Length: 220
Image (tube, rainbow, N blue to C red):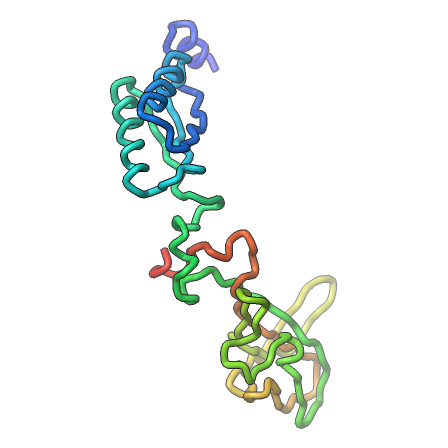
């Protein structure tokens, strides 16, 4: 605190203001004037906001950025740049919208089925629990965008489930046993069991349907 007070009293407080500088395709004269006005107000940094620039990442955008950077260098100002034309980050300036589905943002979803054995010839309607028709090779369609695909079906024996604790043993991957109609047939011994159904879903976050997947190297 004393250091900050000394800086202020000596006239060297440093910069603590970094306003958004919204870009709308303004003229060169306007851009230079805005940078001058901010500098005169003691503002030592700006954050360039791309919205709603009419040509983000295009020739006009880079032309405007050249002007801003030239003014910043002359005035010893720092420049930060918001990285996309759409909030939140990851929109990639619209590139994901027409990209292959494997590059889009998917979500992993878990559902559980609880039951007790022994059970011989036990039959589970996996398709019913997931809500889509396994005969459709593309998965279940939610309108034009949302889709769901099966990832795994895991069975586990419940050893302890008291006071909020859960102990699972004898995990079995039964994914390959789900038939084309979405049914799972399996025998289970005596005891309590849980069946974990895992799917991946496309289009689960409306605001981020056209965003990159941070888990896919090619997408990033």
